[in-house]
Image (cartoon, rainbow, N blue to C red; front, side, top):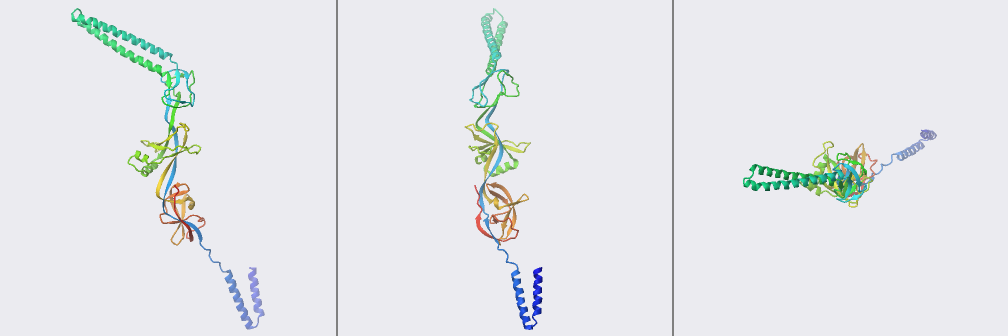
Length: 397
């Protein structure tokens, strides 16, 4: 404001001091030129040139996505070891965590009562067999006498009936002996399969019962382990449409091997194979269970381990863009789309999955479109750019 006042004062002084008309005209002309020059200098500077930014041409590509599901790991065979007879636990032949082979003795229950039962059953069998011999002799004695009409036929029929009863008693006694032998054998508890011994809650001298709620131990065969995980109904429908085959078994054959992520986020060195789909959905959760099988020759995995199974799914002929080429605003993902005049428009897209640092696009852009790769943070809609380093969309597999 002060500068403007000084200028007007100079103008008044010049007009006052120049009383000559010619000088006045020249002075006014020079002053006009001065004003025009100042106006040219103060005029707005030319607009900034359009920014040069990298652009990608959208094209079809192939990509692989990985989906993780929580798993519960079990041995191929997990057996609860229980006693089939009552008694006192006399001996424990194994320690917790030990590896045992099929048929190896694990526990010994006091067998004295069952040995006595076996001895009694054997004695009863011997008596029954002797009764058969005696009944047979009676029949043989009466047969000629009846033929010669020395005794009545009634006595021979009675003798034959007694022989049949004696034979039935022998059969019954044999069954009792077999039962006693089985119970005696149950006093030595053996490993039904090879595997690792679990906890041993019962100690030597404990009273053992068939009705005990807690087992003697658990035996796990972990040469192979099963990882069980669940798919929602929508995921299972997508799974069925993704792979070729008329049956679930055919579709499972086309499924790529899966990897196992352990609880510490390390990857289990052996790949697994999904080999089973449950026969029905769980009514409570609305999910269906699948099973992946993993080799475990070194025994690194045990029943009860947890982790995540990672399934890789191939996506041929899909649109793939870098995540860095997008911006997220209020839970929506946008890209900056270019038109034919290189004007930018913010375009929402629908993401169907991730592949490494890339997004798989379901909706929003199509083949032939162009998007800005970076430097778009401050671009308003309608801004014009200069495309640079044009690239085709390429997926990382």
